[in-house]
Figure 1 (cartoon, rainbow, N blue to C red):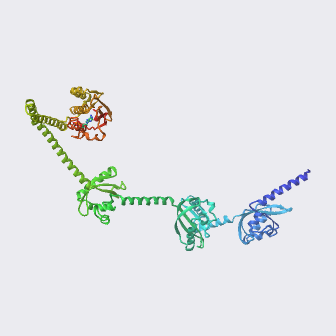
Figure 2: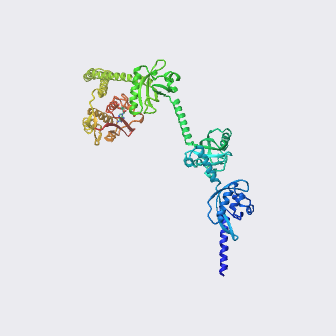
Length: 634
Ligand code: ADP
């Protein structure tokens, strides 16, 4: 390649680059020569509202300049052509479609077809100028400097972006022009999704309602509020609540040019309100349903009562509400006492419970259990909720019960005294009868006739039976009358003594008696001996004919007590009689089969219970019985 060829190639390349740059530049570029337009790029065609470059090429360049500025532009062109730098100039241009566009531009001399031409770069500053004019206007209106006006606008901007409520502006065609981030959040769609669209397009659910209200704002020029409830596009399953406020925005001439709206989400508040209402309804339900009198007193005045309270006191609701609570009390003293006592308790524990008396409308005096508690503890006289339980009947039956108990105890004591005196005093004459009838038998048996012998036998036997009965009755009454205080008692020692005393009976019955290790317990030693005597005696008595009795006495711990057992291999007891045998005079056999009075187990039970213990029996008929009782550990 020759040098000129290489140079040509480079030239073509650079030319192409330059062309592309100009064609694609976002700024409008225009070249004029000898006062006529010779070139425009597509951005310039668009800026000047032309259909194509042919609309412009060939036109005198000053034709498109606003007449007021042609002279000024002319000077600049001359400067450019001299190859000097002309200043950046703001100029209004007349577009092909008749509109005006404000541009900022600067020219520069370039070679074109071997001669000088001027290339101008134009930038559309219409919008910026509009803002500047508006700012000037705004400053003038507020009579402040432009700088102050600008600062204020910036403040508003910050407020707009950070306000906790949603803000937006819509044009008179109800299309979103501007909205804050918070608004987008509340509405549930991004900011960009709103611009240019109407509320109905974004929120089909609520759009109609919103648009109707906004139209009214435009028609009437009034500000309006509306509570909205519905779903947002991003949360179609959640029912949400908003509070919206619309205000018209007026242009310089006073006509409405837009609408501004503020929107606040109140879903949470609504839910809380609903929950509170629900709670209020529940409380009201309880208030009505409970069978207890409930009311509220504020500064001694009754402010609320439920139906049971009215029923209890005989007053109608409106006879109580608004009255001093003193109305319910039979005397000033009772009222004063309740007040003092209750407040002392409330001060200490937050609630007070007092037993008092109320007087009903018809004068009846009721026993009342009164509980109260102020709703707010720091205001103990305000809104004191009280409940009143009518305990008149309870108190009456308590009093009746107490008097029965007294009577019972008295008659019990009398009976005991009677039993003791009777059995004690009967012993003496009975002894005479028995000993003299025995004398009679000894001296006259066989000397009278056979009948007389038989009768004498009955008399002696009857007397002896009566003696046994009286002995046992005395034993029973002595459980109380000769009771000794309980003291630590070695059960092993007691049992050993008992076995020694019963040695003959045990030997005669051919019985074996085994006593395991036994503890020390809290007992009256003589009575404990009586218990073992009676139980071992029965074990010997109620044995199988022909089977040697085997008796075992043992003890095991049971909590803070000991459980003693006396186990035999005798005839046993049917389960249905387990309770009955402990009742006085209850026997399961005839005297002929097994002698006895039916008192022994009653004595045992009475002693065990006097010691605070319990006794029971387990048995398998034909195999044996186990009596067990508890006594406190020493
Ligand atoms: P009594 O032995 O004088 O009849 P108790 O009060 O001691 O009176 O006993 C009541 C009844 O309980 C007895 O009549 C007897 O039927 C039954 N009983 C008591 N102990 C035993 C025992 N170890 N085995 C079988 N039955 C018994």
